[in-house]
Length: 498
Ligand SMILES: Cc1cc2nc3c(=O)[nH]c(=O)nc-3n(C[C@H](O)[C@H](O)[C@H](O)COP(=O)(O)OP(=O)(O)OC[C@H]3O[C@@H](n4cnc5c(N)ncnc54)[C@H](O)[C@@H]3O)c2cc1C
Ligand SMILES: NC(=O)c1ccc[n+]([C@@H]2O[C@H](COP(=O)([O-])OP(=O)(O)OC[C@H]3O[C@@H](n4cnc5c(N)ncnc54)[C@H](O)[C@@H]3O)[C@@H](O)[C@H]2O)c1
Image 1: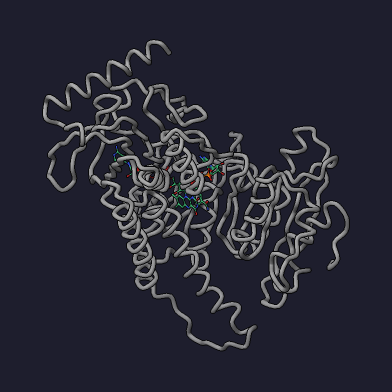
Image 2 (image 1 turned 45 degrees about the horizontal axis):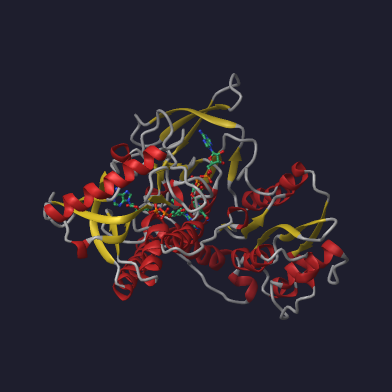
């Protein structure tokens, strides 16, 4: 610790001497905060820091703000999920509502153009927010020279380097696709999520490796558009972090949508020698069993993401990383090097955009000398399939494991009048509360719009509410939200409508 402080004091002295006397930066050019990475973590941290009166620069190398989420993640995937859902509904459900349409077709270029328009407008919107909040935006790749000096290879200046100086630096460089040994992603036939968001043809057969968030969302998109989708998962279950009861119903729902699952299965090799098909050799995860060969037009590798720090020069300043490349931080998001902070996907915790955003606000508040707060146990998670699956707090398995006595209340969407009236009543709400105090420990929802419904539960959990608190809150009728109220009633007492 003493060494780190010495290093920091010396580094700050060096920077000021270096920058002031070597012409890198005058005193007025020294930033209070420099953020590396313009994703949901970085851009939110930059705006919040500027709002708190700190002179702030954000450096981003991809040529557009918004990071993975806006450019190749949350936003384009939700655009395609919505468009493919509309197509699927038109083909399978409209007639039930008395809406007749024949010859419904997919215009894939138009679908992709709508997605691209959404991405473009939102990334430009972040640029406008930077201007409004007076955040200085530097386009280029950042490398640490010292804990307060960053060299930037500027995109527009053809290899020119400039030095950005800051009293506090926030690393918000996010994550990248985790590859699998022996599988080369070419983003055409063997794709990551980025390639799966930009296919130019609907594959006849798609194999998805990994039944996590990306695999199920992107698998759903292409299954709805007509691909035969097989999901290969190493674990014995899909989305291993999900509540078991919800997960089983979710898998059945996806199977009804014609997605096939091969669980407990590992990929042994890939053969791309044929120009027609990719051949995947599979084997039981435990090893030793019969091998199977599956053929597909496209293989999606979605077996997780890995923290991204390549080219940052962490070794130049001694920032530590853990075994899997994440940057450990303390409560205030400080790394082991004083004045250097890290947030979002590059540090431990759920790899989610809203959590990165909350990190961004909290770290700016800490730097400004205020209190920040993020509770990773209360971060909601949503799989944006149809129905959606959303959760906050603990699963029943986790509560059981903790040894706390608990009660469970459930309510099926079939009992919800709004869901029935719109003919979209698949799923359920499940509330788990501590037996002694009735404090809510976890809420899990599988339903149309679950991703919106979950926030009432997130608020309840944040304020340590009881199931009775939710049940006695007046809910408008007819709404899907009433299903949460009924599940809460079922937790401490009895529901009415089932
Ligand atoms: C297909 C897909 C769908 C997703 N859907 C959702 C969803 O629906 N909801 C959700 O919550 N999460 C979703 N995620 C996860 C979400 O995208 C991430 O959790 C989130 O983007 C993390 O934010 P971040 O700011 O930490 O990093 P990122 O968004 O990864 O941003 C980091 C930025 O830093 C830049 N950078 C890296 N190194 C440097 C450097 N040396 N110099 C300058 N710039 C640098 C990168 O170019 C990048 O733009 C999805 C992810 C994927 C891949
Ligand atoms: N809706 C959302 O919030 C959303 C959407 C997409 C992505 N994301 C985020 O992006 C991150 C990455 O998503 P993801 O789906 O790639 O990862 P994930 O961690 O959600 O799922 C990866 C899955 O792949 C399986 N797996 C790992 N190695 C395997 C192998 N060799 N063979 C077969 N299966 C294997 C794992 O058991 C796991 O089920 C996630 O952490 C998630 O938080 C979130």
